[in-house]
Image (cartoon, rainbow, N blue to C red):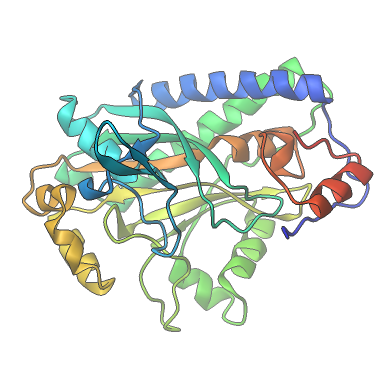
Length: 335
């Protein structure tokens, strides 16, 4: 059974019809603003990939991909978890150049997701990737990119609020950057998620840097696959979400591994067997471009901007009977 929280005295600022209209507005505005802010071009993306390519995202390494066979092709394929690796290969194959990138709609099924107010089995993201130079593989470039994304989100909110005067969402444009180790040092007695909540409650808009490696405690702040983000140059963008009184992660992103960091992270993660996969061989041989990229949750952004208490209010999904009952009794419209 999923775990659902019903905020006290919750009511949606928009009715169901207005919500559907606003979702379309948000998605159109965000795509346009992201493309302008980051110099991206929209491309078509796959729903499934051949696992032998090494292009599927392994997330934390324990999630089971949805697999099915295509008889005429003679292969079993996997529904993507994300397009983190596919995008980099696409930039190479589609002849993109430094300073430009791609944006695509990513739709995924994560069958093992623990369902709650923020998580469902269906994932929809704006997945983006951009070619950079070796000199741009640094914190300053990462932070500048994060700021442009936050501006895109906040500017989208301004236009949505102009359309719906009853919407009273407020977001902070000032981003507080902190490393995962600094966060552990600040709140040593809290779990990683509790640290995120505590810091986001105080700062409102935060970016947690350097996720994936071991902290001084011997624990990780969160899991990261070893073959896309450079664990020293990545992070999560988080906003404080008033309806649920919690930290709401809207994007995981980072400067991607080069051959040196991939070599080190594959060994650290015990994934040396991946070196033989086509994608990984090309990366280790320096054939693929240096990039920065990430995913921005479409439903998460809609939840944030529209002050929704449950992801089921902004995307159609499957929920257990208890969740449906609790939401129905609270007047929360699950699609």
